[in-house]
Length: 177
Image 1: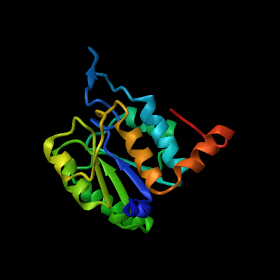
Image 2: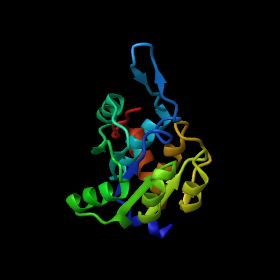
Image 3: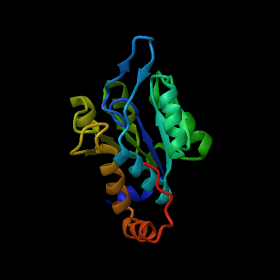
Image 4: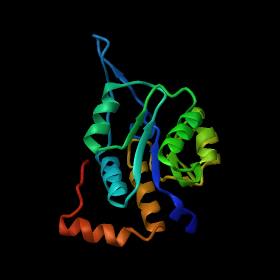
């Protein structure tokens, strides 16, 4: 797990990773997404462990913007037609390399980024190509704790988990779900 020590940024796809991939449409054309509180806790724990956080999605959604605000996510990139190019821009602007990024994605438009980051991951219900290119495949489906499991894996690999648990028990971790 030594390779996990280089990770400084946790980047995530939205639909199929933070959600179960289902988008609900109402009669008035409005849409809704459901987000897991377990995954929200995962983002809070990642931040407590010193990781920056980013969302990168091919869609644009006010629900994503709201969830990012609620969880204090550092960077939000929407309408990303080329996720690898967008991540390279973000890394360049932040003085990071792709090797310092962990990314979880679930579909064909995520495979290239999964393959180029320092630690690529996929939920259990991701497409085969995403899973095949990932170093980590969660036991959980997208929107149902896959992100939370990934965060714990990374933080344990960075030897930060015990410290975060102590902080949590003492009330010094700002937990959002």
